[in-house]
Image (cartoon, rainbow, N blue to C red; front, side, top):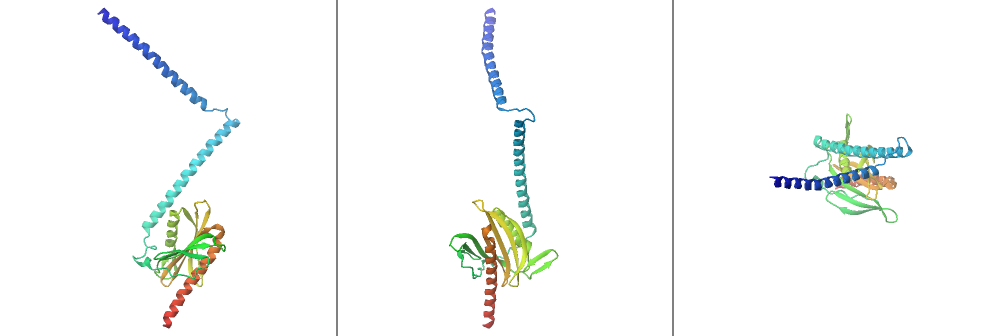
Amino acid sequence: MLVRAIALSLALFVGIGIIVPLGTNDADAASRRARKHRKHRKHYKKYSKRWWRQYRARQRRARSHRAQVRKLRLRQIRLARVRHARSADRSSVAVKPGVQKVKATPSSAPQTWAESQASSNELRFRVDDSRGSQVGSASISVVGPAAGEDRTVGSHKMLAGVATTALRRDVINKMIQENGWVVNDYQKEINGRLVYVVVAQSQARSGQLQSRMFYFTAVDGKIYNVATNSSADQADRLAEESEKVLGSLQSRVRGTQRASIRE
């Protein structure tokens, strides 16, 4: 029994001798880490120049964070409105199957508009300057059939029986897909016909601001859209050329109708 007690005591002393240094080392390491962390955290005297510099930096970071949160929230609200509008109004420009396969009537486009692509319901153009350098693009497309006459019902304006809010909504959806936004919309007369115009903007990959114009008009029982995309300094020129294209489109249809009557 005495031998066993002595053996247990020796084992206990040896264990304590090993554990105590290890614990001391761990405590010293933790203390060193804490001192190092405190060393990197700079504390300045309150209201000193350095304190104010640190305070303003914190405020800038907080404002930047709040701005990012607001931007994300606005994007979520805009997407939610678009989804709500889609579900609430299905009478927009959604046309019957097969109607969109009607080819857009070719127009007497300006010489600087070079046809680049054609599909069943759209003609696309490359827009060049006088030196042959591309300054933008344009398209003429058939949106759908005319559903009635131009009229105003209360606060709702109709272009050929289609609500202008529905046409505007289609432009908004397109701009969301292309990281753009709608700026304004209005109605005007071109060659005696009512035209609905939506003004939008988008950002090119280079970061340059792009001017986007969408003209809607009804010709020969169909609603046409003439759309342009250019830099801001070319916007006025393309707007003028777009109105000429609309007038040409209307004139060609009238000429075709007269020829049919003569025959």
